Image (cartoon, rainbow, N blue to C red; front, side):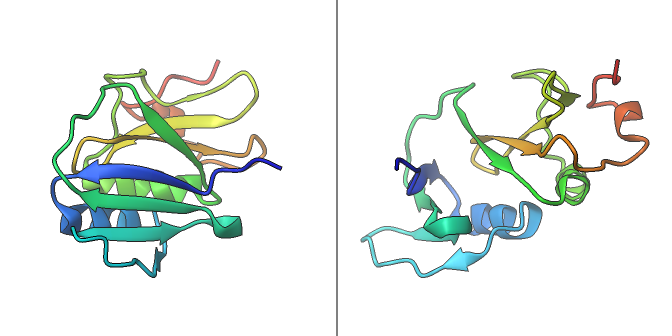
Length: 137
């Protein structure tokens, strides 16, 4: 079996990134070893992890990872309040032909994250009326 053990991101402000991943995306903090530079690890299901390191690095524009969330509306509401929804890079939020919802956000360091949910997860009735969404056709 092959699985992702962790995704590693570089940020320029670990405190801001920790607030974003914990409070906006809802990821739990997990034990983080002393790496010799500021870092924070976050946990996912089945032992998967996100490693966030405060190190200067170049960030590509379109590279991203995708989180499939159980509470799409909740994450969208928090992302909207935080002003982190990105429609410039991959376009507005939309329902894909598979039925999966897709929305992109940027963390405080500019890393791009795709937010998705299962095709059968209910979403807010007014979702497609919002300025960052493509009308459901």
